[in-house]
Image (tube, rainbow, N blue to C red; front, top):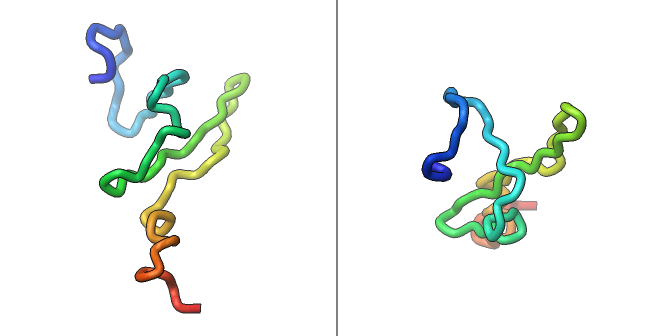
Length: 72
């Protein structure tokens, strides 16, 4: 549940929900606590959507880890 008593249409699995303003839960405040990856960032303008930042991957999380660094 996002917000109690929020009127919303039925949402099917695989559909996206856009949350335009989320206060303290903005991407800049995101962390990787418990290995959580940051979501993709989408730009919606005049009915057209564009991915402006891809979703973070497990490789992104490990990239700075010297123990897991790929061999040159």
